[in-house]
Structure formats: C-alpha cells, structure tokens
Image 1 (cartoon, helix red, strand yellow):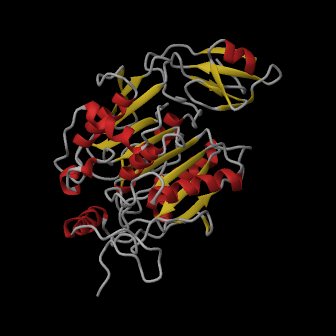
Image 2 (image 1 turned 60 degrees about the horizontal axis):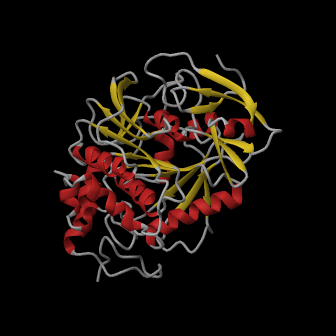
Length: 414
C-alpha cells in the first residue's frame, strides 16, 4: 500500500493513527499555495546540520546558522519554513542570517520533510504534533535545549517565527511552550488550535470567528498548569492573502491580546517601511508591546522582504513566496528586542520624542524599575536584553524609547 501524505517512511519512528482523508488533501492545498519554480541560483547561506539533538519524536531536521562573531550567551531565534520549502530556502531568502550577523543571535532552523507531510508542511493541525510533550512541537523544543547547551545560548531570550504552516506552527510553539519562548512572530499563520472543531480549509479561508476569551482559553488548555507570563506576539499578513486570509490576523490578535488581558483596540497605530505597512501595537501596563499586528498592503501569501543593502532592507525574492515589500525580518528582530541599530531601534517612538538615558549599576536599574532580575541576571525592561549579573559592579547605559521600553546603549545615547 502506498504511503499516505501523513505516513512515516519505513523504519521511521511510529506515529499516531492517520488523519482522515480530508486532512490528507490539506497537504495538496498548502503545497499548491507555496509551490512554484525552483529557486534561482544564488549564493547559499552555510548551515550546520545537528544530527543528535534529542529523541526527536517529530522526525524533524535541525540546522544552525552561527555568525562568525557571536556574543557570550546569545539569544536564539527559531525559524520555521512554509510548505514545499526547506530550511535552506528560508535561510537564503528571509534575511534572517544577515540579521543574525548584525545583531548577534544564533539562528536555529527546523525542517520537516515528505515522510511527515507530502508537501513538507509542519503539521500544525494534527494533535500528535501540536501538543506539548509530543511530536513536532517537542522536536522543536529539543532543538532549543540543544542550542542552549551546545552554544551557551541564553534560555531567557528564545524567540520563534515562521511562514504559513511554519507561522501556524509558531503559534503552536508559543501556546505549547510559553515557558520557553519570550516572543514569537507569526507570518501568514493561524490562531492556535483552530482545527479543534474546524477543518483546516475553514480555518485558512474564510477563517473562524471566536470570541477573544474563547481563543485565549485554547492557549491556556495547551499548558493548563501555566499561569504566565505569556509570550509577546507579532502578527504579519499581506492584505491581499487569499490562501490564509487576513481575518486570521484579527483572530490571532484576539487570542493573544486576551491572554495578556488587553483590549482589542490598539494602544497606538502608525505606518512603517517603504510601503506604508500599518502597524497596530497593544501595550502592557509597563509599556512593553505585548501584541503587534503588521498588515502589509498590496501583497498576497508569503514572507515580506525588501532586497537591497540599506540598513532597513533584507532578504531575497529568488524563491517563491518571498514578496518584495518590507523587510519583515528586520522589524521582527526589532520586536524581539534584538535590533538596536539606527534608524529606529526597538519599537521606534512615533511621536519623535527625545530618548531618555540613564547610566547606573544593574542593581540601581532594577531598583528604579528600568530592568528586572531573574536567576541572578538582569534584563532591560521591554527589550529583555541580558545585562549581565545583578549586582552593583556591572554598569550599563539604558535608553528609554518609547516610554517604558529600555535598551542597552553603552556605545552612546542621545
């Protein structure tokens, strides 16, 4: 009997019973959405395959991009490709490796294959893979553990992002492992556990409308004993997407603002980038951006990139579903608190006000409410940058912009 799209190859780890026939066709739907000609030839990013990172119940492959210069205890960004894509294609075109070089983070790329799904989609809709402690979700969690152990990465600064099926899997990781990921960015993905009582087709288009409280409860049910804090979440969508319709951006917003106890009315709205992307931000009481929705005008289904050499540009359109508009990866890194380059910095102040700066010991920063402490280390409030040991000897300059959002600015502050 031929393998179904959701069967394992002979000799691979056993899986749960096959999904109904309807779900098998989903691989074709998502595969068609992301299918296209092979990527054009261009310089490939050098990735390192990690062959032994845990029990790997989801039968995924782990790759790492390690910048030539990496700070001690670097942050980690996990990237999840879309259907029919690969870790290499996502690395070559998303712009993330170039940002890792510039901003000093370790990039981990998870890859699925045809033995898991005929169109190489992450199985975001399958309970065997989208629950804590099992399947693909656990495999990605084990990749993070490997990065922390093998590369000395900072477990307090772990982030995840992905496109389409990878975007939906990003929501899975934030829901199943809120104790692992500080923040995530869902690109053209879906709310967590939409397929609990709906077909994947319905979730993708026309989308499912639930109350914010109902969406939030689905995340809480993913890890019932967990009480917070919840990961910060950025949501990216093309406003012409007909594959995973923009309604899902609204439902994702409802899910994560409700978890943070926030209104669904944005705290502030502005436009960013060369294409006037609309950015809605939902601020927590301490001034941090808990949820952000970025709606890119004039594009369909894919990762927004802006090829070029400018400081706000990144990525390539040499592969299908990397769309020339705005460098979303740059803004995602900024949302994570990893990008402090100019112009901008994390969450630039749309009011154009002058940044306030303080130089003090880590102890003094914590006492003044500009930083927090956890596990003996100090973290800038808002950006969550690791400032080192919590004591009176380590000194840093912190810049506040916008109000309540602090970043390390030791090399100078206006």
